[in-house]
Image 1 (cartoon, rainbow, N blue to C red):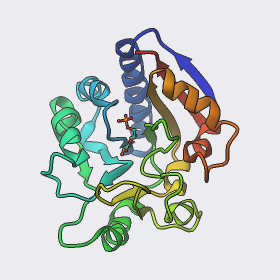
Image 2 (cartoon, helix red, strand yellow):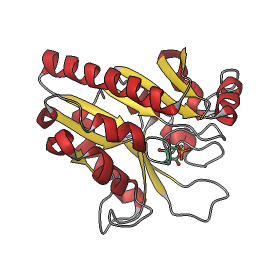
Image 3 (cartoon, rainbow, N blue to C red):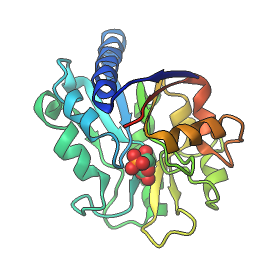
Length: 225
Ligand SMILES: O=C1O[C@H](COP(=O)(O)O)[C@@H](O)[C@H](O)[C@H]1O
């Protein structure tokens, strides 16, 4: 794992945005297209604001979330709103977006159907992972009954997940295999609590600390605020 520390989140977002744009351009130059997977949550908005303005051939980029809450895409709980408002704007409005939601299906049937759409786009060229203080990443949650299935190398590309102890909605997540086979992995975290969790995760198994599986090949980007 490579840890890059920045003084401020703003400096971190600028640097990471430039790195991702360069990696996507290189993928397009090599293979004619690129696949980018990004997290939801409260951290990546400023990264999306910058990346959306990057000068690259966005028409050849497929964007997807690493995970999504199983709510309609116009719900305020949906991460798709964040992507549509802050990433798929400016130059990036030309990108193709695969929403991890299927109207009319529950999260289990939906994950199966979405796997068919996601699988042809694998391997992901660039994945950005967030992390919670409980060491979950994407929607691979410690303690969830579905976790070991989502961590099985034979798992479908998209898997259902219900966070334990939460009365919130079910979710779907890219499988651990889909995430681990990404060509470039960036972990984006802010704050001392997440830095402490990251250090703890390095000595734990992916069952207890799902982020641990992705650290050996990742660049971690951290700022205190
Ligand atoms: O639940 C989630 O949490 C993580 C971390 O979110 P943050 O709000 O602490 O930045 C996120 O990476 C993941 O995509 C999301 O579904």
